[in-house]
Length: 179
Image (cartoon, rainbow, N blue to C red; front, side, top):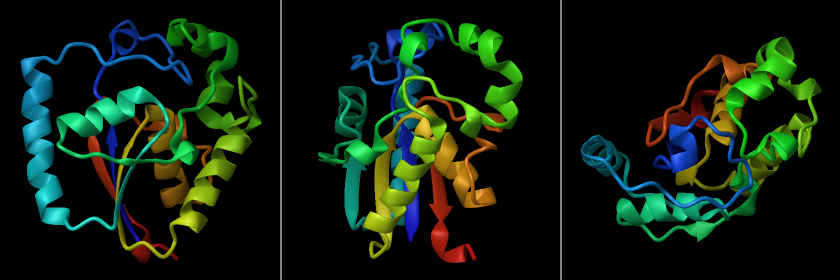
């Protein structure tokens, strides 16, 4: 299975480095840089078509992003962003101050608004649910994409916070090459 993931376009909270989690935040007005990256990513997507399914989380920022790409995705709640609990709407630096080393080295030990073990379980459920698909396009969120990236490379999500995924970044993981 090949999965191409695009992190949603920036929101005002992204620009302020505030954690959004499950807050249903709208996209910020697009910049010329955003529009240029959409065009660059579209060239990548054309080379990867056709997609079996195009999916987005239940949060509107992923659907808005897909719309800018010209897609009408199916909603998949397993793709929802990590629930950051009391850190939602607060600067990411506050989470790092509270859980710095654990957030970087062993995030699975944390429970925020949801446990990070639950995030890993959602990824495993997602992979099981769509295991018979050969080519997926996903519009998703930073923590979820970092977590599946870690799971793809290491078989767990504990390395998720050692990688950066920018807004509107396109990443492809080919699970057919794993194992």
